[in-house]
Image (cartoon, rainbow, N blue to C red; front, side, top):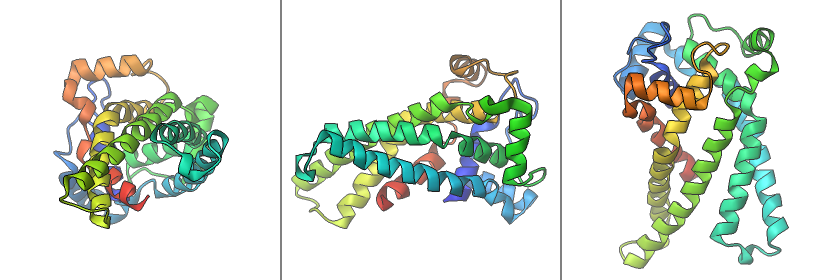
Length: 252
């Protein structure tokens, strides 16, 4: 699903009135973005930033699963004693911790996705460039937003999944089957995308900016985006965001 994620990033950074590089609306939607990028930059451009993305999943996924299980064992001794509230609390905490630690890989991924295949260097080259120009703070830019997004996604998706699955089974139309799991996963992915997309747009823009010339902080980024592009600008890239969350939830 990485080309979908790249299209999401490109859709979210375009249309910024205060940034001449990203002011133009180049893409009308996810499919148009994928086709145009492939035509203008080549097929490999759809995988710009794949290296830090893989590194992120390796680090983020490992830390998240490890801390999630550890937190659960701290609160309850037996798996059968777990409740929805326990799982949500543990999921939020593990998501915040793991996403915060893996934040530099997110910054690298977004920068490489936004700049495309034309001027892109290697992952290490981009890492050194960010560190030399912006210091350690540059690698942890947007870390609070990353943590907020992780908390929102987990905090919304787990209850929605449980509620949807419960109602589908109780309705009598579907039993406790793999199809019920699929449908519940897509519904909770929709809820997660609706709740987290505004934070995701702001996070992407904050991580992608060099220095701090355009946005002075999270609130400033929200206000500037809303004033210059309208409220719906906070939902740029919503469809690819949902498309990624749905399959991810089914696999998990």
